[in-house]
Image 1 (cartoon, helix red, strand yellow):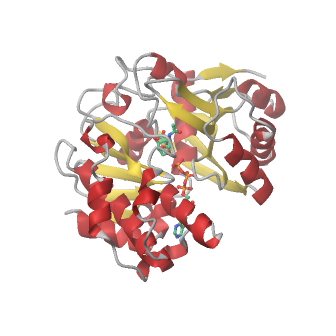
Image 2 (spheres, protein in one colour; image 1 turned 90 degrees about the vertical axis):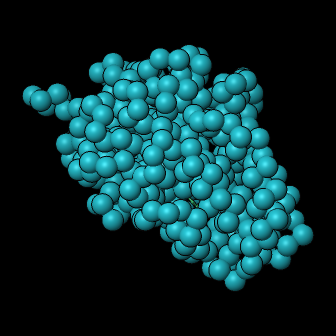
Image 3 (tube, helix red, strand yellow; image 1 turned 180 degrees about the horizontal axis):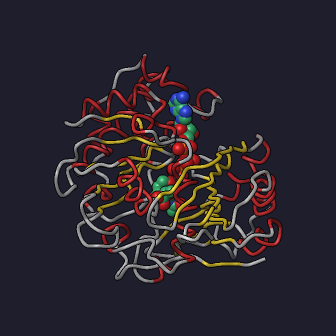
Length: 363
Ligand SMILES: Nc1ncnc2c1ncn2[C@@H]1O[C@H](COP(=O)(O)OP(=O)(O)OP(=O)(O)O)[C@@H](O)[C@H]1O
Ligand SMILES: CC(=O)N[C@H]1[C@@H]2OC[C@@H](O2)[C@@H](O)[C@@H]1O[C@H](C)C(=O)O
């Protein structure tokens, strides 16, 4: 720990798209971002991805096959390549998420990781929040609040993460802390890339609609988008969260369409769900800063810009790294947990009171 209380933390994230592990160093006291550090990515092989995919939807008391070993060894391999970390934030792999039912399951043994790395590890970030009545997600918003301070904004803005699932954070940067009433509103917006990836895999054996190339050739079936928006999720008030496959019905709505029309329609569904979410923000944001893989899809970005009435731009425009923001978030959150600071609040997860989630394991 530095004399000013800041910690060199290493965060890691294995997201719902199951493509690999992101890791990033961050110097922070859990409040202020002092400096961004090294980032690295470790892709899952096809075989590893298939093992993880086979475990999706399973709970800790169910047979997870080789998935825990695959995930842990990928994390150890990647995280050992970093030097100087004083604390690790380990998100793990979400396999199942049902906050109003069975809870939330981020596969990963933080105690074993601490042993392997020889560094304290903060993990299981979401369970406490769920136990106290929260959605357990999204958790990046407390880091988004620190990012808003880092970029020096004085007007409300939004971060939009377009991963497998989409999530939106509205921020009033003039509030003194993220847990204060009115500082944040955060929630999952709907599916983002997951249904598009599933379509591409089913119809073409491809991982994703790279650069929106297929969607760009298609025509949106508006009636399918309207039916999609009929889902009860869109009538719920935020905060609210989703499991990766909660919107499997989206694929049914495009079943009869050509590949290109189906890709275009699923992409339009993502934009339409963000538009719905934006209407739930307290006041319109100055701009929407987009992070996550979806910002690389120009068709998705164009549809979003057409749907929203403020600039929609990638986070790179303000000097942030849209591939690593979630890994950085779990570095930041790890330091908050170590310092006993909250990581979620009623306005981000619906938890009854602000909660400092997470378990700390020492080597
Ligand atoms: N060039 C691209 N063109 C189109 N889509 C892309 C491109 N690059 C990435 N993507 C999409 O982004 C996805 C990966 O996004 P990201 O890494 O943000 O997801 P994640 O972190 O796994 O998910 P989540 O945030 O839901 O946990 C890919 O699966 C793909 O669908
Ligand atoms: C349960 C879970 O892992 N949710 C993820 C998922 O991926 C995006 C969205 O759904 C978000 O709610 C969350 O991840 C980010 C990192 C978060 O907690 O902020």
